[in-house]
Amino acid sequence: MQRQKSFIDAKPTLYLVPTPIGNLEDMTFRAIKTLQTVDYIAAEDTRVTKKLCNHFEIATPLVSLHEHNEWQKREWVINQLQQGKNIALVSDAGMPCISDPGVQLVEAVLAHNLPVVPLPGANAALTALIASGLTPQPFYFYGFLAHKKSEKKKQLAQLEPLATTLVFYESPHRIKETLQLMLDGFGDRRIVLARELTKKFEEFLRGSISEVLEECDGLKGEMVIIVEAGSGAQADIWWEAYNVSQHVEHYIDQGMMTKDAIKQAAVDRQVPKKIIYSEYHQL
Ligand code: SAM
Image 1 (cartoon, rainbow, N blue to C red):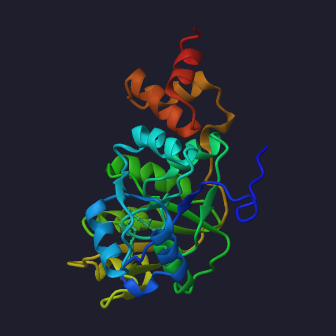
Image 2: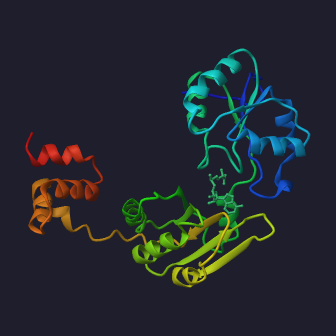
Image 3: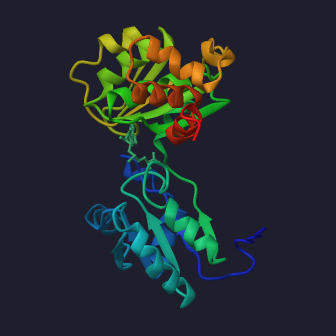
């Protein structure tokens, strides 16, 4: 159990500071003041943050903290906090930690019993959701799907029965493939593709998946996909009455190699492959 009183026991703090997702006017007064007054700004890409700092006359030193050095940089940040310094974490755009670096740092700082104070601000998922016209509660923020098609298919199959609005981030290079897989896996549900939010070419495509898919050729820019909730009905789990051996043998009977049958049964049951392997081979 840990109790943090953010503004009463003033201690050196890690501030999580959102930055604009396209429109500089979305920077809050508090975000600017925090970035001006901390001792260091840990930034995903210091070149991107330097431009923001120049615009808002923020002269605080920048240090780099990105997905490849976050693990090592945690030590440095904790050390600075322990020496009484305040640090702000920013990503290139939007909220740190949301499909962006920061999660490991936050965990480490909390593990050292040091305060983490979040600032509200720009975020692509929520900005798209509130204008989608789809029910915003409950919603499931998924972020980016896997790049690999087979993995993406599996992820979508797991999401299909959920009775919650779904929120995804996607790149323009993969949007057509992703929408096609959504159409195959979800049926022709209502979706909203929100593009270039807060920027000059902000656009919402609201319609069925097939309608939006038709308009997707050549679409560029940053994108959020909001998908209407599923019915909540669980798909028929045909293997439910089978034990593990029967489940694996069902696939072998269909012509799969044993190792592939084990792998598929593990996917169906959402358990590690080694569990199915041991049970099947009675190890
Ligand atoms: N941390 C960010 C946030 O709070 O929204 C998200 C960072 S993630 C690396 C970048 C993805 O967010 C983009 O690929 C896109 O899917 C989405 N995104 C960011 N800015 C956007 C914008 N202006 N319009 C639409 N989507 C955006």
